[in-house]
Amino acid sequence: MTKAIVEVKNLRKSYKKRKTKEMITAVDDISFTVNRGEIVGLLGPNGAGKTTTIKMICGLVIPDGGMITINGIDNQKKRLRAREHISAVLEGNRNLYWRLTVRENLEYFAGNRGKSRKSVAGRINELLEQFRLKDKENEMVNRLSRGMQQKLAIAVAMLAGSEVILLDEPTLGLDIETGYEVREILREIVRTQHKTIIITSHDMDVIQDLCERTIIINSGKVVTNDRVDNLMKLFEVRAYSIKLDGHLSEQQHRLLREKFPQLVYTPDTYQSNLEVDLTNSQEMYELFDILKLEQIPVDTIDRKTINFEQVFLKIVKGEEEHAIPERA
Ligand SMILES: Nc1ncnc2c1ncn2[C@@H]1O[C@H](COP(=O)(O)OP(=O)(O)OP(=O)(O)O)[C@@H](O)[C@H]1O
Image (cartoon, rainbow, N blue to C red; front, top):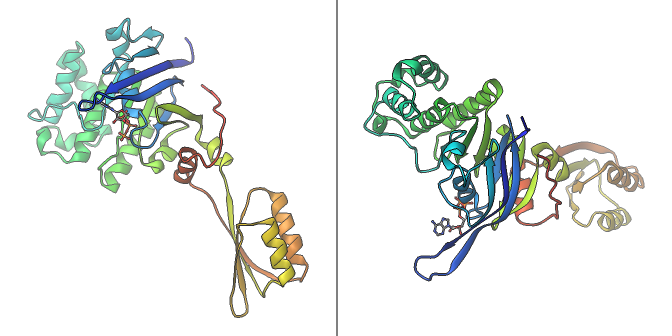
């Protein structure tokens, strides 16, 4: 059994604009792999091509070129067989029957996959417990909150028993509490059931919290494919705020500005403050050498670290050139 469960090679898709007939390239030669048991974030700004990629992986959109294999099965040549290994919860399309109850929905979708009501009863009970929907099992879906509908949609995807689950914006529009609950459930699914999850989200907190690796796409191309912790390290800018018991001399100020052009110096009545980005410890030593010139006592040093949202923005805004290691 190979490590990779989803393989995407040289995938391309263009759409024709209805009014102007102009072609839009949504996905432009994308390649990546996802390994068994991994939880990978597919990220990108609006219109980057995430949803088109997800829809091609689950066979809802036909690619113009390239290849997708799911568990070794070509999803264009053997669409139905490949589909058996995938469940998708797409944004704005909850795949639920609004006039059926929570339990009836689960039974219906299990039936669609050829399973009898009796054979899935136990599993449905487990899922209702896990998704905290037990007290709503006889409620019609149209009476549920958006968060509960989302949880049910994920439960339906889980019931199918597929190894790969695609989730498009699973926490979009949910209140903070339900958003956390959904995250918690997803984390548990990955930990206990070794599912492979591909998730798109604009919420970088969700991505940082859940994903080991992210594939970032921009204008239909992969711009980064790396582990979240590697990216955090790579883009870590150590922003320091240093409070001094005194003021810098002119010479010190000049030397510091030469060395750290972004430095912000704010003198107060007796004290002063320095805001500076230090990317390595050598720069820290150089800064302290300059401060030592006048023996000004350092009162406090505070460090601010970067979060994943800032890393993401740096990547998509091209503030930093970053090679694309294919780690899968
Ligand atoms: N059915 C369609 N017909 C025409 N153009 C489309 C269609 N679907 C997507 N597009 C265009 O393809 C590009 C990629 O869209 P896609 O929805 O895949 O991006 P996305 O990364 O999911 O964006 P978002 O974060 O806004 O959902 C966009 O320019 C979009 O307008």
